[in-house]
Length: 156
Image 1 (cartoon, rainbow, N blue to C red):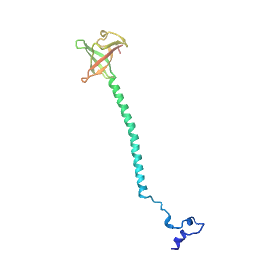
Image 2 (image 1 turned 180 degrees about the vertical axis):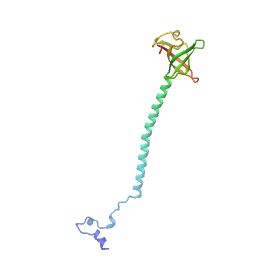
Image 3 (image 1 turned 90 degrees about the vertical axis):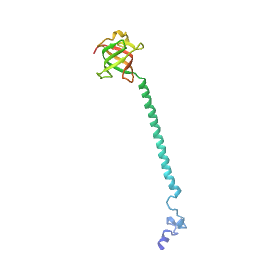
Image 4 (image 1 turned 120 degrees about the vertical axis):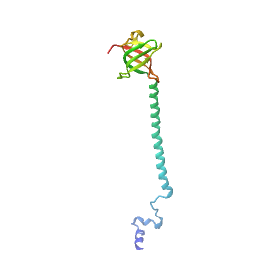
């Protein structure tokens, strides 16, 4: 009992001298309400971080969809040597395709196909067997390229 009185003595120089009742000292423990604030704050921060990290992912997805739309609109480019020309069916057999392929590919052309020689306007008759051509167009489900432009190049 004497030790307890020493800690709570009324001596003026002692730091606890101004506290008349030892039970008036508030402990440093958190109350139940204060302890519930900590997990709620952490939960709020976690949801906020998740929301901000999800927004750029959505923006990246939208940006990723745009090039695929551009790729669909972009034409396919095949190049190679003409093996044979079937004018009756408007077809060209080409040894090549997407570079560096050497397989035989089929190319269909029609009246809307643009014929050029070294990027200058030309006629369809300028393209002969063995000629080197670059073809732009769209590939269908059967693997046939429907040409929008056929460019005759110098032999390689």
